[in-house]
Length: 138
View 1: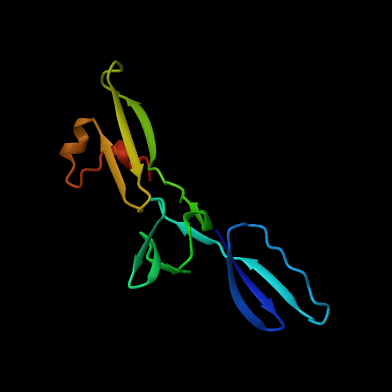
View 2: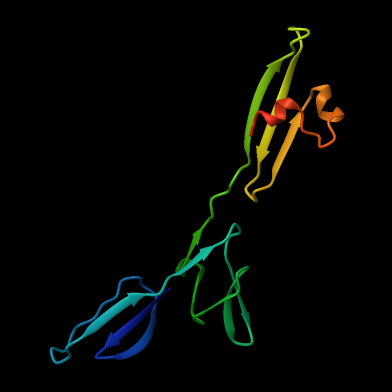
């Protein structure tokens, strides 16, 4: 099922037909013709579904009102890009014992939140929880 908006000399009408190919023979007297295929873009992580409530049709989960003859083939699902957290890791060796290594991690989440972690004893000794390894990220 395809939905078209057809304009003929500033008069617009909506045409619904089974084929996606639009056939039209001009009469030769009309100065302006315009044909547009009606397509809905659904930008959401979940795929679209159609629901009819009180003789109105909607795309859910975004609740966009659409033409009553709309089918799922008239909707283009655009999945948004998933943003992953960015993780930075630095390794440090202990000055007192070179066999001990400390790992400092900074994770930046898509929301802008920043979390720090270090496995050295200075992390829990510092009042603000920022040891010298975590301060090296700044």
